[in-house]
Image 1: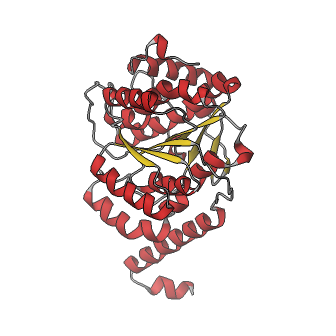
Image 2: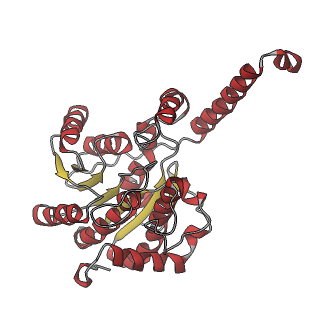
Image 3: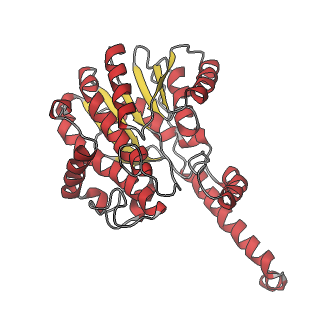
Length: 328
């Protein structure tokens, strides 16, 4: 066999090696795939999902709508959200699905969204901070914050704080951050460079944003534990979604071929989010990081309580959180 392989042209050898590696990766994903087995209904419960018009967010919305929840789709583009809403209602049979416009890259939009929710909703049982972006070149938002950090971390940070009072009022309730194993790809978190003031690398910014979600999960959990609010984060896995829609065209061409073959589907990627939203066995679990519907290990940096506290304080300053908006 080895002689036969060596006789093949070098490009064939490389292609075969890549196929074997990717095939092994797919087998690993299949073997370790976590599936939410809870049959719990959410009748009378209200759920907010950011970025719910596509990918993991949409699949989560479909599942929770099937369980009878009132599902609020918090989306930047109302037109795309309207299409998703129709799909969710059709697949779930639940018409209690509503759209609320939310642009996480605008603190003004986050504040307006939160104000509308506090005015219109009597309760909030689950907040799922799902929306995210990657592979974006350095751009500052209208708030002077780096776009990727604000969309992934700062926007969700402000949103969570503004809605925390309603979550506590509705307790027991749950906050879920869709983070990533990418949080472990950085060995540092420079609090003086959260907006890429000193240097910029799109990959590092993404790692920072996901590490920030893990750290803030750790910091907030004990602050609200006695109120009946749990806070957890998760790694959804390598999932075929639109998160790389801003990547270079050559990357998107490769992704279009390989992702469907070797990555999780959006439905498979949504399982851990759904598990954290509904499963009774995690009702009192808080401050943890999950992968494939079970507790997983984080990086050493994500366990640093001192760093988590400092990040929280810096985040409060950067989003201009007011003293009366602190509900912990």
